[in-house]
Every structure is written in structure tokens, then in C-alpha cells.
Amino acid sequence: MLTLTGMSGGYGQANVVRGVTAQVAGGEVVALLGRNGTGKTTLLRTIFGLADRQGGEIVFDGHAVPPGRPDLLARWGAALMPENRGVFPSLTVAENVRLATRKGFVPAIDPRDLFPLLAERAGQPAGTLSGGQKQQLGVARAILAGRRMVVIDELTQGLQPSVVTEVLAGLAAVAAAGVAVIVVDQHAGLMLGWCHRAVVMEAGRVVLDAPVGPETRRQLDELLMVR
Ligand SMILES: Nc1ncnc2c1ncn2[C@@H]1O[C@H](COP(=O)(O)OP(=O)(O)OP(=O)(O)O)[C@@H](O)[C@H]1O
Image (cartoon, rainbow, N blue to C red; front, top):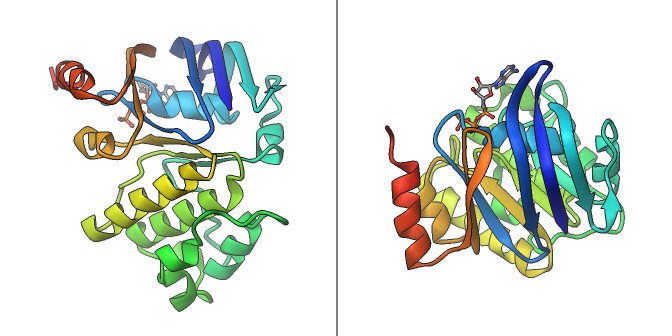
């Protein structure tokens, strides 16, 4: 679904992501892990055109994505929930949901079943929601818009533990329907329980890309140890 080849990215002159080559297939849930500041968010931002692509290639669902055309990714069915959740604060919850809804696409799980607040607070401006509530709205929007790929930065940020489990189960169902799912999160152990593969970054590079298994867990413990 998504192929990155030698991708570099950052902010103006600052190079953060260095020559990342990776693939994510439809149906797969991939955890993008790494200690703070290793470039996970910048990698996602570069893919979606929110940071500067400084080199390399992106192919999505068989289409090359030229630099400066992140709109094509959205058109081809990729959705990112960025770290700041990407909701429109002045619009109501219902309007935010409506804008993310894609004609002719019904996700494998209905975010309204996952998050009762979408109905309960339908008329409330999204900017007045709590952080955890905004997170639910942001995740819902990504699921609704991600016909082929759902990418979520800091998945569990602000979510109650009971909601986290439901969200992870929901994303597993989304992937089972053929969608590629990429999640970034601080809770590596939790992610490994739900993800098929772990991609670990260090200093802007991928240092591990492996199916989740006992060996991966051991390597991860070493890589993610706070130094
Ligand atoms: N707008 C920016 N301009 C310049 N440098 C930036 C900018 N945003 C982030 N960086 C730098 O890029 C590096 C990687 O940051 P990034 O947020 O991508 O890492 P991360 O792995 O997502 O970290 P975290 O887990 O803490 O969110 C950091 O050194 C950070 O200071």
C-alpha cells in the first residue's frame, strides 16, 4: 500500500528523517516506535506534506506521490491524525465528522459505535472538547477518511485505558478489512500486543523493521531503553 524509498525530510535546512526505506501493506497494523525526538512525527509529517520532503520517493497504492502534492494522498484514501489531532476547533463535532466522511466508503467499524461522545456532543464546537475527547474525534475522522490507509500519531494520548483497548480493537478490525494502519505511540509494550510489525527509528533512520515476536520484543527493549 505504502512504499517509502530513501526518504529524507525535515524543516527547511534542518534534516530530521534520513533515508527511510519501508513498506506497509494493506491489512497490516504497523507500530512506528522510537525514543523521543527520533523523527517519528517528522516521518509522518513528511509523508503527508506537512514537513519538507528533502529526497526519496513515496508510492501509495501504486501511484507515485510527487513532492508538494499531499492532496493526492487524501484523494487516494490515506488519512493522518497528526499529533495535534487535526480537528477543526470552530466547527461542531458533527461537522467535523461530516467533513471526514467519504462518499461511498463505510469503514469496517463505525466510529460512532466506538465513541458515544460523537453523538452526545454532536452540536458542541470541537475546540471546546477536552484533550481526550478531541483525541476521540481525531481518531474517528481518520477512520472515516482512511479508505486505504489510516495513520495515527500518538494514538493513546489523552485516552482512558478502557477506551484505548476498544480503539486498538477497532483499528485491528479496520486493518482486517484491508486498510493499512500505522500507529505511533509511546507505549511500545501495548502496541506490540496489537501490531503485526514494529518499525523503530533512531536519529532519523529506521534501525529495526520486523514482525512482532519474542525476538523483536528483546531487540525493542534494548532500542527503546532511555539512555
Ligand atoms: N518545526 C521544526 N523545526 C525544526 N526541527 C524540528 C521541528 N519539529 C521537530 N523538530 C526536530 O526534529 C526532531 C525529531 O522530532 P519528532 O517530533 O519528529 O520526533 P518524534 O520521534 O516524533 O518524538 P516524540 O516521540 O518526542 O514526539 C527533534 O530533534 C525535533 O527537535
